[in-house]
Image (cartoon, rainbow, N blue to C red; front, side, top):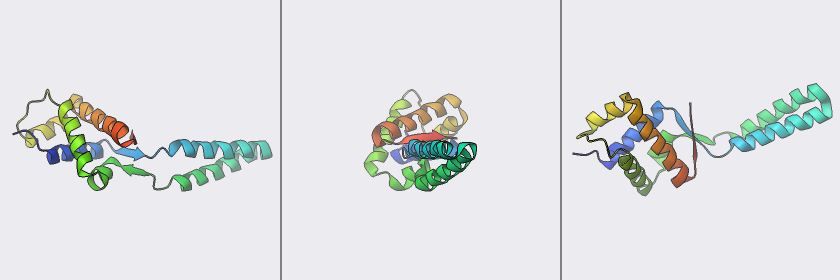
Length: 141
């Protein structure tokens, strides 16, 4: 019996947690601009000490502005995705793994977690789905 949609979603959640995948809400660019602008203004106004003060204040402002705008993929899969989005993610991962002929989730999950090639296929598919379908950028640590 092939894995069910819920089992595929569970695989995606486990892999997302293992890979420490996070979604950033396009705030990194804003943080960069805030920090860079403050550092540049500080340098123009106060020279080297202005660079230090402007960079520090800019970084603090950017951190405050971007607070809470980065979430784990596991949280999004578990709490935020609609049933239709979960179904599409499961279909996407299933089609990416069509060449795998396993009978049960008890077999496929250890295979995916233990085999770099299969794990890479699923992780790539999760990143592609979040990017294309949900307009979110995933970072991994």
